[in-house]
Image (cartoon, rainbow, N blue to C red; front, side):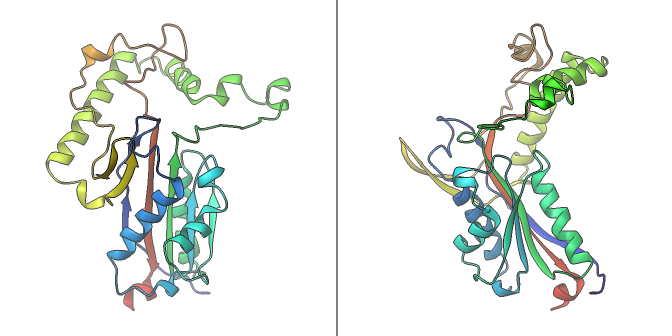
Length: 262
């Protein structure tokens, strides 16, 4: 093997949907989301021989049900890749998809692979983070971790404790600014090229999902100030300034220098 430069060719994603029964993906399987994203990405590169793909790495945090069963392998088959193309699943909680990218990119860099697909999927509507998890009692009985470490919302409150200058007001203002920036990016057409439209069915019939469902450009700091703080009485983390519960998938194509030349 010989080291080589690694090129991030392109990355795409499905529009993100609100988790839960009212979300657009409630009746859509997690593996179908990543498969449709994968097909959409490969359609942009019709001259790429599918058998030339050396690896498919897909992350999911709650690896059960329709996002279990070694989803990197199953999604590759469902996306029409030859059975000679291997795949695996990876879990690093919120950093899973990024770890899939860095792991396969590293393998390309040392010459083990030439071309790889890497990304992630999460159907938090069907598989809430930590669902059916059974933490070993030693974590708490031996005080290996604080109980709050097993809940991300409580952890967020502890971050506010550690950095008191990050006030709730600052968090609310940052959240409002983020919503406004996302809305402007859509208006300016800077996000659409990264999206793979996906058909989703529900009680009201089928629809083509082309835009993130969680945009709230009408949000204001005033409107957020009285939202409930579910993780601590009189806390700082609310549904307005926290990351939303989201369903969606993302996938990227990477290649080494020799493959790019070909």
